[in-house]
Amino acid sequence: MSRQSGEWRVRGLRGATTSQNSVAAITAAVDELLDALEANNSLDPSEIVSVTFSVTSDLDAIFPAAVARRRPGWDEVPLLDVQQMQVVGSLQFCIRVLIHLNTPLPQNALHHVYLRHAAKLRPDLALLS
Image (cartoon, rainbow, N blue to C red; front, side):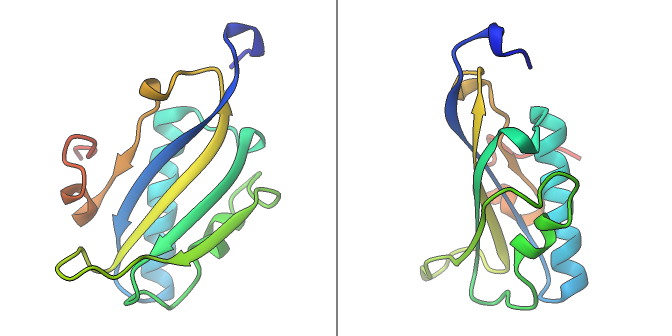
């Protein structure tokens, strides 16, 4: 993206997926989610302001940020893990992400990604595979 193409602003990019509670499963789910977000939004880690991951209380095998930090260029991105608020009847085994990034794109040009059972959260934004 060229800085001359428009006025740059901080935007929010969302995504979510589900996983079993193991290091291998969470690692695969986070990588799949971030791969999809990168592929659908031409993300450049140097333009990412910060990333917050939230997980439901049933996922505790590994921090999603630890998985993200292994990605090329992500080692200097500020990353944070938090526990998702518990609401009766809400989706279990869920990993959510909010990426704040600098971009010349308007908010409505970003492609949010909801995978696996998390597609139920936002069927209008789910990727069909």
